[in-house]
Image (cartoon, rainbow, N blue to C red; front, side, top):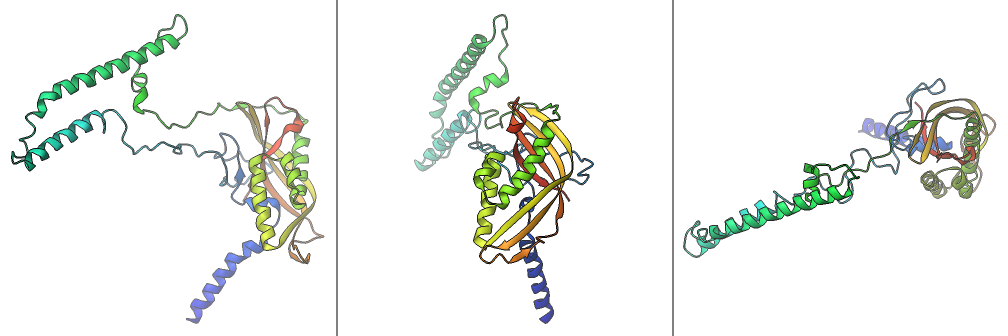
Amino acid sequence: MRRFITVFALVGLIAFVPGLAEAKMGDLFRGGAGSRGSRTFSAPPPTNTAPSPAAPIQRTITPTPGAQQPGFNPGAQRPGFGRGLMGGLAGGLLGAGLFGLLTGNGFFGGIGGFFSIIGFLLQIALLAVLARFAYNWWQTRNLAPAGARPRPTMAAFAGGAGFGAGAAPQRPKPEPLQLSAADFPAFERLLAETQDAYGREDVAALSRLATPEMVRYFNVELGQRRQKGLVNRISGVKLLQGDLAEAWQEGRDEYATVAMRFALIDVTQERATDRVVSGDPTQPTQSTEVWTFRRPAGSARDAWRLSAIQPTA
């Protein structure tokens, strides 16, 4: 019994240690957070600065590839040859049989009269299908450019039958992006200013430096620290080494993922007493993280905003 209590206490202590060790801003996103466009769920290439893999992004507003879209239930029955025409006929036949059974004519007694209208129903169904086919063909013909007369395909024929419904929208194909020498000082500035704004809990400044998604994450973390009565003081941020992992354009946005090793003074204090909970107010610590920045295509270097943070192993 005593051994069980000892083990339980050690497990509880281990679970509590990460909460005490929380420090710099990057540590708040141990699993990675933010968005990298279509590459959100792809690992950034390793670099000299960050040869170890970056942590995968776990908190993001980017839909997971292949995720089910709202209103789309792949297991649901679709109109057509499911619960539509054939399902209705089967239900009618079964109902007719049950009616015959209840009236004493046997299970098949009520079906005889029912078959007299099957031909009529099938004719209506066939006419409806042919009308649908003709309408889709006419629309495709009239929307096509002059001289082009595409033949109706199965997709056009089944356009109203739910085939392909709910498919995720296609993202623009990423294209390599060539950065200028002026972009790299902008990344270094954003590193220092974002860390400083977070340490001062300056949400207005963070809104100018990061995407709205990242600002929301920062707000959540700052709120949790306030509830615990803690504050994270960050100062003396200095970039020691950095290199570009990848840069690309995707539609109207440009992205740059940069590996950075930096030093900083990083201290967590009690909000009410300023008592140091973790960190050293005189000794800088070092960290290596992968940051992704985003800006509208063709914008100036000042338009870059922090879009994702991924710590390294």
